[in-house]
Image 1: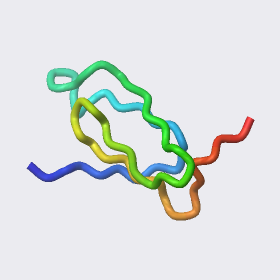
Image 2: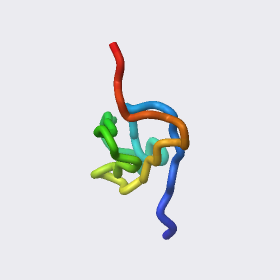
Image 3: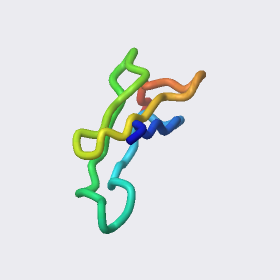
Image 4: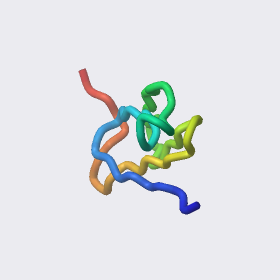
Length: 59
């Protein structure tokens, strides 16, 4: 099975798996400063921060 890669623009993403029957509890994953990739611990879906997007979170 190919590893799923999702490109995102946000420093925090949510993952619930692929479908209700094969899903998992919703988890929120946050990119750390300087990090370009974060992997879901349940389904191994990989989230990649888009070019130009920043992992820095402003308030």
